[in-house]
Image 1 (tube, rainbow, N blue to C red):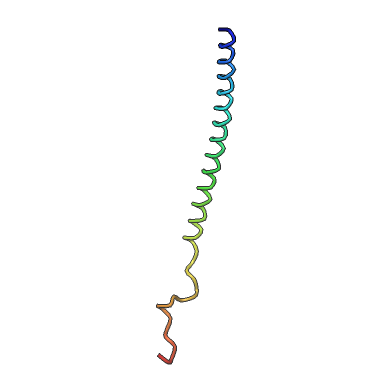
Image 2: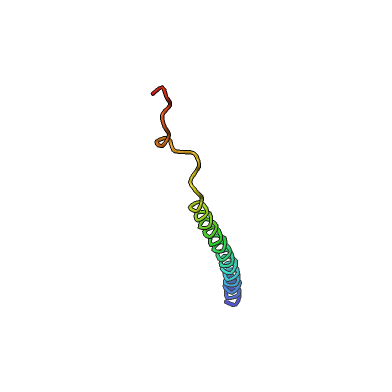
Length: 67
């Protein structure tokens, strides 16, 4: 009975360690995701702020003289 109890305690300690490791990894991944989302938002804002191109679109261009 004593040996069985020791095995269970050892298993519990190992599982507790595993949970701590996984919890820490999850926290780090959440930070990475948060940073990536902020960077995406910053880049979106930067793209929206760009002025339109100096080149006219095809619809706005005057046709060549032979048309």
